[in-house]
Image 1 (cartoon, helix red, strand yellow):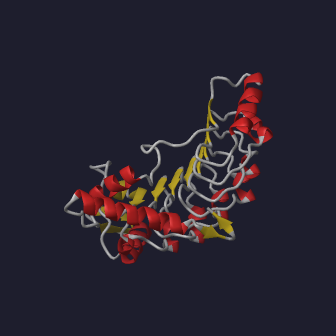
Image 2: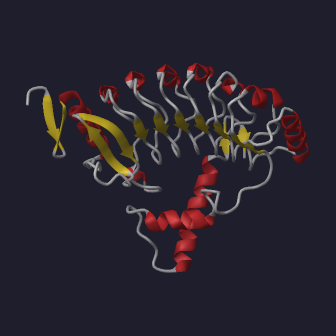
Image 3: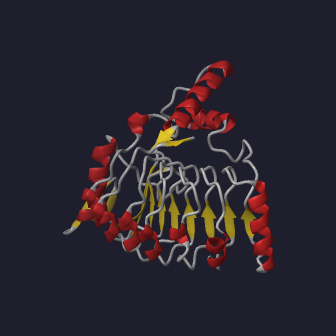
Length: 288
């Protein structure tokens, strides 16, 4: 078939097959077609000769199976609507990702981003952005141009305040700011997000008295039915780096040799937790 190339038993537009092959070279392995097994966390989905979803998560903790970059040719996946590159070692995105005009969902959790990638503001239809557990100290003003954005997750970063850059996002419905270094609440930002239904800032440094005042103001504005979680700590079930959750991840990670005894499992979990905490210990002068 002229203009098409077979990749993993699937006929794709040649440029898209080449893009997938470049990603294979970066991960040093094949990327399977999971169109018939959509629960898989690693692989791609396709439709009518186009790649429509790419999932590049392989291992929670083994860096030998984690990507440090994405190829520029990802821009050739013109019908891509979902990209999941979580649990890798990325700190930047290729410029051509701005060409993914149909991208709606982008998951970049558990990477090494220190800055919000500005080229994402050029994506007109993106609805979901996840940057949990990176190294962000702020949000780029360019995010204000993503008018379609409905859900933003930036939990587990190094933010010290609710970013004012989200204030123009009139269609934002969910904002997750848990486990940052936020010390105060800005009522004006919260109030201006008229479509915001869920706001979670638990696990920060916000005094309860400030949270109570803000909740009282929001109540006066008639926003009593919304889910504003402004104070309180996270349970071990909610904290992705609680020892309980780390142990579960170790046991399900195909690239980690699961310890034979509970004592060995606990020791490995504690080492991983310590390594994670050290990653956030000091960034740009911020001590956690």
